[in-house]
Amino acid sequence: AAAAAAPPRLILDLEALQHLDASEAGPLTRYAATIQAQRGDYNGKVLSIRQDDMRTLAVIYDESPTTLTERFISWGVLNPEAKGDVEESSE
Ligand code: C2E
Ligand code: C2E
Ligand code: C2E
Image (cartoon, rainbow, N blue to C red; front, side):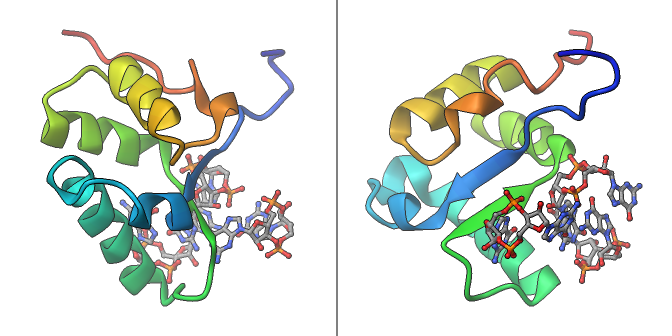
């Protein structure tokens, strides 16, 4: 992306999230519900999240942020434009 442009946003599809197998999507579902509660944002079909939240979720899922971003996109719960948005932290 150009230096002057904002990075693409990370947008969760809350309706798609409801239709996933809870055994895999459970941690993400609970995390999203927590953010909704903290914001008082209960009526949305989508939820914009922070870059830092993908790093936190990567720890929860024991994956790299890049791998987890691709998985969430493949599940249909994260916008495809998010791919490559989350920088890798040093490992
Ligand atoms: P906080 O981080 O101290 O943020 C306080 C308020 O600053 C937020 O109240 C919001 O009005 C504004 N704010 C901070 N960062 C942003 C941002 O990137 N974009 C926008 N649009 N506004 C921002 P709010 O929304 O009621 O959230 C209350 C608290 O809930 C936040 O306090 C934070 O502790 C937590 N929270 C809310 N959304 C998220 C999230 O997406 N991720 C995480 N990790 N925490 C969140
Ligand atoms: P956008 O970011 O492209 O979002 C389009 C629409 O997606 C929003 O329309 C809203 O219906 C939904 N949406 C996106 N993220 C969330 C979310 O975290 N929670 C909920 N409940 N809905 C979400 P809306 O609200 O009419 O906003 C229109 C446009 O206004 C947004 O387009 C964005 O450009 C701007 N905007 C709204 N809120 C914020 C904000 O907190 N920060 C910034 N920077 N822009 C905002
Ligand atoms: P946004 O509101 O368009 O904010 C875009 C970016 O501007 C954020 O990316 C963050 O880097 C910066 N930013 C905006 N407001 C603040 C602020 O009050 N404090 C600080 N330190 N930085 C701010 P980020 O963090 O990746 O967040 C992406 C999107 O997630 C935000 O887009 C917003 O839609 C949502 N979001 C994040 N945190 C909060 C929050 O606490 N409350 C609400 N309502 N939305 C949030």
